[in-house]
Amino acid sequence: MTKLEPKCMGENPKWLGLNAEGYLLPCCWCDPIRKKSKNYNGKMDSMDQLFQEKFKLENVENMEEIILSDEWLSFFKSLINSEDVPKICQHYCGQFSTIKIKEETI
Image (tube, rainbow, N blue to C red; front, top):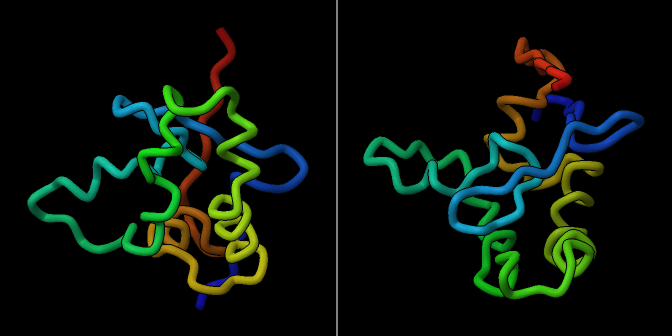
């Protein structure tokens, strides 16, 4: 397993996205819409626990209910411990990833 440098954690995290289905995302690369593609490659198979109906924004009072849930905390713990890390995270946040984050201030 490649060592991770999660962009969604750390001193200056780049995280949280919202998709068209109403799910909060750990980052923009984790959108479960990828799984609907006819050439889906399995990179998000271990992230299903984050995209349950109960985690849609319309079903919670605030975002803390989502990001402080057992499922989300377990996800972040797996990133910290490099255990059962989704392939999508390994691809974008692996130590040797060449993916750069572009920031734009409007």
